[in-house]
Length: 569
Image (cartoon, rainbow, N blue to C red; front, side, top):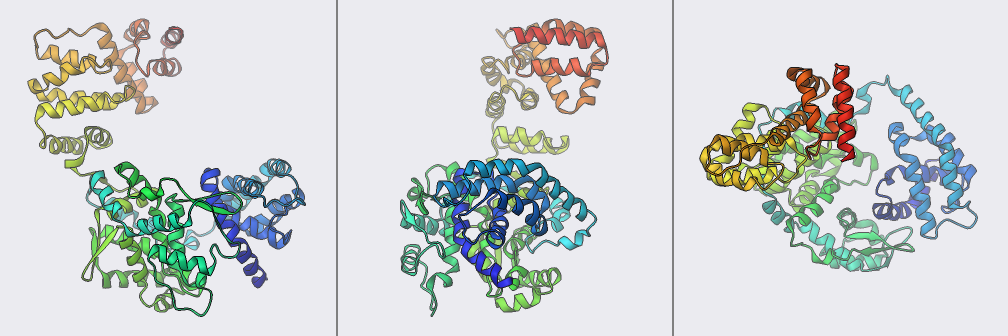
């Protein structure tokens, strides 16, 4: 049976690789990785022809076979049926769904029919495994979760400006190689079913990317893992995309890399960030390879925790011990790899994330940015902030909204030291005007600018032209007794109240109800008679909320009347 699985997997691999590329452009909401087991067991149990699919076989595959072999019932419940739907659509659109198959519409109808039963089966599997010991689900060397507490205790990590990071990303050699490979692929290159490229094409691709030709007696395509890693990187970067009839093609703007726009550069670099996994050692024995899975990420997280740099020998000892602890084959795999850190270091240098200084391995600013993103993707808390000198006013306001008051004050103080008060006031109020619906940013900006006194007068005068800021500007100019400044109107006062209610509502229902009680039902009723007229972004939302949560039925009724009037305007 093992031999049959290996043969079937080999037959499927080129088709699944092409499907993954197709799915990126045509079914981005699906998870192509979930198709592999379904396609494999369809080939093994129901049809030796990869393009023949029948409704009955599909039903048996999903309801009988998959519950016995699925590894992650939770992921399967959420994503397997959409993934299989995408795969069948791919087969149909690329001419691979044989005439002997049922129609795509019939197959999709079968997916709809079995959906509820399939999800129930997956949930039963989840219930059966709920009591399993969590230790049985050990992660790999790149699992960040064991370091969550240490990450939370790190000092604030300061991230470099986008312009600096983009310039570093432009210099990444691996992205240039991925570009050159994609440009060589051209506008419609046919890919093979057993290997993507013929040996002759592999020779050309090696020359295009500047990679050496390996010394091998066998097929060249089987001896160039670095080329296939760069191919996969080109797909990740969206330099390559699937074409029609089993072809792949270069995207139109690929040859323009490195792009001129910093945001475009960083967007591309982030698309390829998960390529760090390609730095893991690849050994002839698959079990030994798996024992070192995640090594490159493991190196990155250890560098971050060490403040950005460590001696190579220390990293090697640490990771070798971790590999031995995680897998009974870890020590054997480490020995078989010879120098397991070498491919990881080479890949990370090529992607601009680390540099070597003698025997010291050091994160670059781009590498620090990348690790922070990977940690965030793992839903682990880490205190990372833009460098003070590069922080925009909007970034400062958004960050400070999430910090304790003392820390927020420190951030503001450090930021203000780098600017003249008048310029700081101008930047803060311009940031507050960017989004009329963001009351918290607006209140924060007004509060800080209000401490700058007469230096902020020109900025306040300019803010009078912004409807969302006029109430604050009129109030502060009046307090400063600026000649010719308009007096705050009742509408200005009502706007300020709506801003405060918006912030209070964002803190939760109990906080909002408490703020209404502080005002008293009579005052709330008086406000409801006029406040519906204010063109505030959240007025209808707030009136609706008051009608639902206010404990006084008369106030709730008045809020419903006010909401009706607001919606009728």
